[in-house]
Image (cartoon, rainbow, N blue to C red; front, side, top):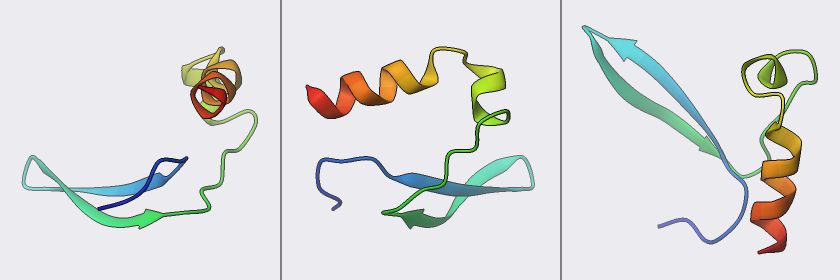
Length: 51
């Protein structure tokens, strides 16, 4: 069980299924990478942490 906060989850695809490799309590979020998929990413993270 992991507490309330921001975590990164590393996944690996194995034979069409996804497996959790590790859970990071200090995830890296890189500008120009993650935010390319979701331009509103940073607002969502801050809103989640404030709530």
